[in-house]
Amino acid sequence: MHRLGLSVRSLKAAIRRLQRRPDLLKAEGVCSHFAGAESSANHQRIQDQIRRFRAALDNLEMEGLNGFRRHLCCSAAAFLYPEAIYEMVRFGIAQYGFWPSLETRMLYQGGNGKRRTVKLERVLSWHSRVINIKSVPSGQFVGYGNSFLTTRKSRIAAVPVGYHHGIERSQSNLGHVLIHGTRCPIAGLINMNMLSVDVSHLEKVREGDQVVIVGTQGENEITVGAFGSRINDLNYETLARLHGKIRRVVVA
Image (cartoon, rainbow, N blue to C red; front, side, top):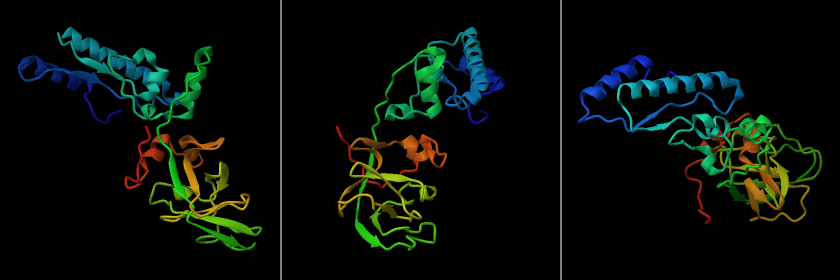
């Protein structure tokens, strides 16, 4: 990736240093990092990286260095390139129950003519509450600007979550939340700490009702992948964007 690590030339220099001072230096692990294993567009580049990594391991062993742990695979590579699994795997997003990409999931579950039924157990859901409900006449703009115009008498619910918390403003008029197990569209521009939701199709929404931003409610679900794919986000981006001050509740 030309980011960190050792080139072939600098690896040789590192080997010489290890050999000169075995009393001070010991190779505990040797690793590399794939340049996009979650996308088939990078397949040839990944194959080249595997070949180079194996060559580096051969060089180390030829110089008498051994006993170290080898690790190359991230979550996506562990699913798609099992031949590159060594003593360790650096599971990242998969340990939280999320696929690195939709393509990774499709390739793994249906690749090589095999049908695998693998379900990752997600460890995250994101909830809020309705804090206010307004009855808005037809022909009125909701929120900042003029991006959402009511075409009928509408009921608009306010939810105290905004782009400060990690919801991209690009979700404005595109995203949905779940209330009473029903998908409800975001109405208008997402504010810094609040968004508006059209609940006109629900009869009994009240202040204090639970709002699911990511997760399951009733028979419906909003996944992180669906949440981010509308604006071409990766799962990683959506998850990493969640503000650290959002209250976390650990559920056993």
